[in-house]
Image (spheres, rainbow, N blue to C red):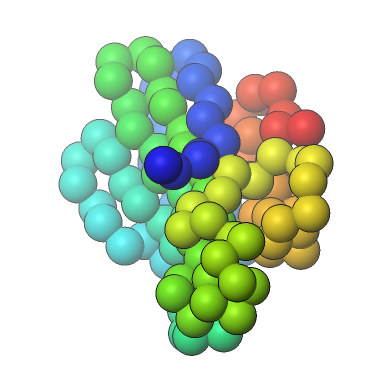
Length: 119
């Protein structure tokens, strides 16, 4: 089972220039550009927990999902305490630092979009 932080909001106009500018400024690379849906990732490598952001627009509604991916090496060394994916909201003791880094970055984007922040 996957656990992702989800935020839905109404956006007026084209959000992609703002999102792409934010991604570039925060070290997120676009992984899958497909029209109204985009996937961004920050961090690569065996010892890194990649921070992921998916944004999809359907008309005026924009849906955002953010999560930290834990690779098999990290899961084995944590004795499988870490799940394959974990949301970025605060609370709990699993993957605290990458979740905080991702939350701070995504909250910067939400602030620019005028959307309530992730606690």
